[in-house]
Length: 111
Image 1: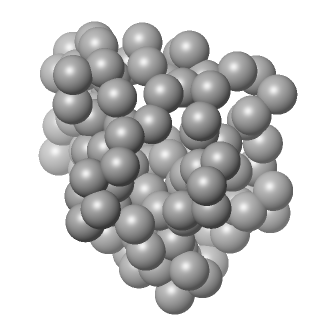
Image 2 (image 1 turned 180 degrees about the vertical axis):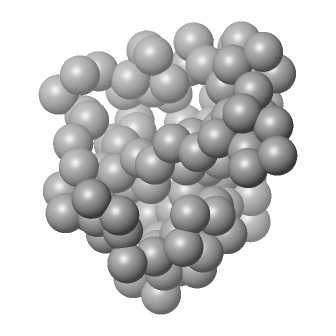
């Protein structure tokens, strides 16, 4: 079933920002960092509440995952992770280490 939202990451990010997921997270030195506050998070501090996978329109090997996240201290935001041949392996391992009980689709706009 096709989503009512466009198939580009930026369109999904905009919708989630309108829903309060405004923190931009970046991965650095084994931690997820809130860009504005510089607070750092370990896998057990993160809740994935939705994710969306994308393939590049012109190059199917250009793949990414948009993670919609909440933290134990209440921050809400997103992180865009490349996967496939261009993946950041350390960041991929970080997301694999998030406890399974911290992963759901309860905030997905596609539900």
